[in-house]
Length: 115
Image (cartoon, rainbow, N blue to C red; front, side, top):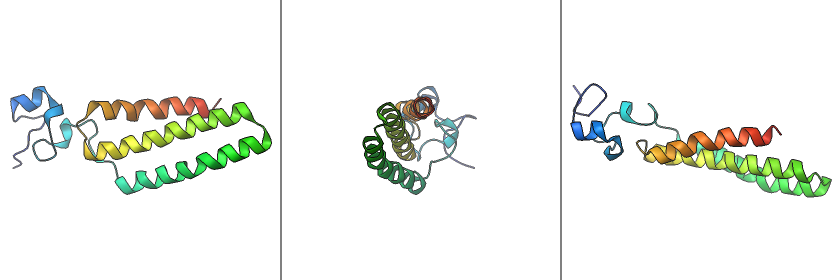
């Protein structure tokens, strides 16, 4: 039997304020996600999108597609921030602010890329 605090019981202080939890004291069921995001997988996507940013600037200037370039730059940079926040969530799964950033940035960047 686990000694961790979970949604089924445990330390009442941690149940009332899950932001005080750590992986050593609480179960993942109290976290913002019920799994730990992969650091390596998200780091690969950060690298890919980071390499696409200067390529998009170059192609946008070369072909003089200014509004398309700006939309893709904002979308790609927000997508990169989304993957960085997933890496932050790996280390602080109980942090609500990182989770809100993780939810907001991909939703906004999808709208920008589809313009």
